[in-house]
Amino acid sequence: MAISDIAPVSFIGGKLVILDQTKLPGKEERIELKCKEDVWEAINSLRVRGAPAIGITAAYGLYVSMRHELKSVKASGNDFKDKQVFGDILKSCRDYIATARPTVSNLRGALDRVVDAFKNAHPKDVREAAEILLAEADKIRVEDEAACEAIGVNGLKLLKPGMGILTHCNAGALATSGYGTALAPIYMGNERGYMFRVYVDETRPLLQGARLTTWELAKVGIDVTLICDNMASIAMSNGMINAVLVGCTSIAANGDIAAKVGTSALAILAKEYGIPFYVFAPTSTIDFKTLTGEDIEIERRASEEITDMWYLERVIPEGVKCYNPSFDITKAEYITAIITEKGIVRAPYKDGLRENIKGEVTEAEPRVKNTPFSPRREDESSGVGLPDGGEVIEFKDSAAFPGFDDKW
Ligand code: MRU
Image (cartoon, rainbow, N blue to C red):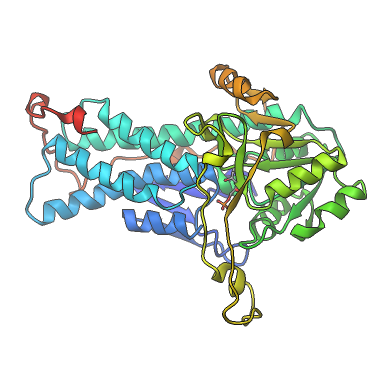
C-alpha cells in the first residue's frame, strides 16, 4: 500500500470526500461533505483531524459550502450576481466553519487564505469566483504535501538508524496530504533501511495513537509497539527511547506549542531522562499573532469521550465530574528543536521562527527506488462546479460595488 492511497481528504470530480477516521481501524469508510454543516461536523467530531488535514478540508469545504449556499439563494429566487452578496455569504461560511476546532491555527489560516484570495481578485462572474476559491484550496493541499516531504528530509538529519522513537497522537499521513509531519522522517528513514523501533502512546481519550498511528505505520511494515500513555516513563528509563517526535496544532511566537493533550508530560519526562524532544510542523502552523502558549485557547470536549466511548458499558460511576481538554501547552524550554519544511529551529525560538519562515524550502532528496509511496494521482486535481451546473452569471461591473473592501 502506498501512503498516498490513505488520502484522508480528496477532491475528485467536484466532490469533497474524507476518510472517516472515527471508524478506523475497523472500517475504511469515505464520506462526502456537501455543505458547511457537513464540514463543521466532520472537523468537530474528528472524522477528519490533524492540523494540516483540517486546514485542507476547511479550504475545499468553503468551496462546497459556497456551491450549496448559492444554490439555496438561487432556489429562493434571490439574486447572487452581486459580488458583495457572494462575499458576505463566503464570510459567513468562513466564520461558521472556523468554530469547529478553536485551537487549530491551520483551520483559521486556511479559511482566511481562501477568503483573501477572493477578496484580492477581480472575478467577472460566479464561475471565476468559484475557480479562485478552488485554486487556493488546491494550492494549500499541494503546499502541504511538499511541506511534509521537506519536513521529513529535515527531520531525518536528526535521527540515526536503529533508534527507538516515541510518538504521541497521530501526526502522519492521516493528518496531512502527504507523509505527515512527525511521522515523515520515520517513513523516509524506513525507505532508506533505518530500521527504527517506533513506540506509540495510545493517546487517550480518542486513541489516535492506538487506532490511527499503529494502523498507518504497520501498513508499510514499520516496527511499531503500542504503549499506554502512562508507560512513557518506564520506557524512557529502560533506554528504549532515543528521541521523542510529536506534531503540534499551534505554535506561538515564542516557541510554546499547543499539541495533543499529554504532549507536555512527555516533554518534561524527556528533559528529565536527557532525551531529545522534537516538534514537527509546517510553517502554516506558526501563529505570530499568538505571543505565548498562555494565549492559546484550549478546546474542551465532551465527558462521554472519557466515560463511555471506549467501554462496552459505562465503568465510571454516574455523576463523576470529568475534565477533558483536547490539547495542552508545552513550553518552549522543553523543546529541543522545531522542524519545519524550511529547516530546523532551535532556541531562542522567538527569533528563530521568524528567520525560519523567511527561509527557502529545503530541496527534498530524490526518493529511493521501490519506495512504498507513489506520487499523488493527477486525477485528484479539481474541476470547477457551478451552483446550477454550468450557467455563467456575470457580475455587475466592479465599480458597482463601492465599499466592498471596507466590509471585509
Ligand atoms: O485532535 P487531533 O487528532 O486533531 O490532534 C492532532 C494532533 O495533535 C497533531 O499532533 C497535530 O494536529 C498535528 S498533525 C500533523
